[in-house]
Each structure stands twice: as C-alpha cells, then as structure tokens.
Image (tube, rainbow, N blue to C red; front, side, top):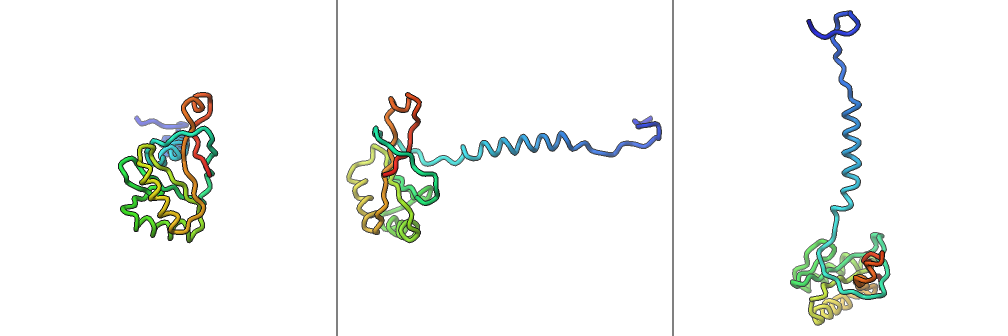
Length: 150
C-alpha cells in the first residue's frame, strides 16, 4: 500500500518550496557580500607618506597605474605605449572632465613617473592627483591605508 493522507486514498502531489526559498535567499546574501570583495585593483606597492586624504568613491575619476615592470593601466585596461596613453587620456579623461589619479609602484624610476606626468600635462589634464598610502605605524594604530587626493 502507498502512503495516503486522510484515508481518502489520494496521494499528496505538492512540493514544499519553503526550504528551496530559504536556500536561495542565503545564496543571494552570500553573493551580495562576496561581489564587492572580488573587484580589487591592480597590485602595486605604493610609496608611503604621513599626510593622506581619502580618495572619493564617486565615478568622476580614473586611475593611471604604473607597475614596477613598467606596464601601464588606465583603470584595469592595459596601455601599450605613450602615444596610446595620450589618446586614451584625451578621450576618456579630458573630454569627460574627469580627475586623473597617478598610482606608481615605489620601485618605478623617477624618470618614468616624470615622463608619464609630462604626457598627462601635454594632453591638457589639469586635475591630477597622486596615490600613496600611510606608513605602517599609522596603519597599525587603527587607521587603514587610504588613497590620497591632491
């Protein structure tokens, strides 16, 4: 004999969706928490300075990164040479009136940083900031590394 309910001899053909909804809500919360952590920037060993300001989180800026191997990135997009850099800066930063922040690894030669800054000024970008982080002693006292705005 099969399982029956209420003595009427009919089988229950309903699916209980409550556990399914519970599992889906838990997965939704996990993805909502994990997604912001997955969008991390490029790995750069920034120079340290005592006086820093926090970089605004608004979308009115772009970050030009110069890594220690000499490769450049405008936000996450690779830049192959200085001519391409000027074209990207003209189209993406100057024409859209955004602020540009320069983030260079501390082992990048000073001459390279000056050359990049020269190309930035040649395009006509006046809003330029440099990104650094606080020294370790300030970070260990409760302050976390911040992105400065100049």
